[in-house]
Length: 112
Length: 114
Image 1 (cartoon, each protein chain N blue to C red):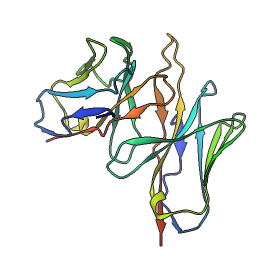
Image 2: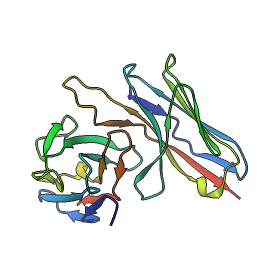
Image 3: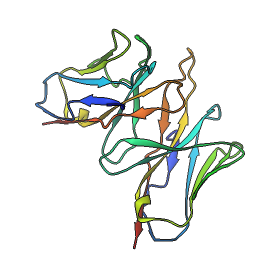
C-alpha cells in the first residue's frame, strides 16, 4: 500500500513479556517517528529517525523501550518486560520534509 | 503546565452551526503549527497548517497569534462528517538540532448532531 503500515494491529501481552512493533514507512520517506497515545490523550513523542540515525530518543519513557531502523526503512519499537502502564496505541509516522507527517493506523497494545 | 493546552470538550453542535476551538502553547520558540483531525480509533491526519497571516481551506479557518501564543480553528456550516477530535499541534525545537518531533494537545472532541 501507499501509506504507513504497522504490525501487529492489536497485541495483548502478559506483564513482563517482551513485545516488538513494526513500522513500514511510506517509500522514500527519510524521517520516521514513533508516538505513544494513551486513551483520552494526544500522541506523545517517543523517538525520531532520519534514515538509520536515531536523532532524538528523548521521549522514550524508560530503558525498557528501544527503537531501531537499521537500514533506514523499516523500524521496530521494542518494549521489554512490559508493564500495565505501557498499554496504549503506538503510532508510527513518516515524513519526507518534517512538516507534513503521515501516521499509520497504530499498534494497539494491551498489557494484562 | 502542558506544552499545548486545549479544551477537551465535548462540543455538541447542530448541523450548520459555526464552532471555534482554541489552543495555547507554552514554548515561545515554536515555529510550526498545525491542526490534526483524529476519528475514533483511527490515526491522526493533518487538517491544515496554521500561519500568522491566517489561512482558510473551505469551511475551515485557522489563526495564529504569536504574541499571545494562541491558535484557533473555526469551522463554519458544520457537517455530520466533521464529528471527530481536533488536535492542536506545534513543532518543538531542541538543542542538538532535532526538529523532528511534534507536540500534541489532548484534543477537542466535536460532535455534530442532525
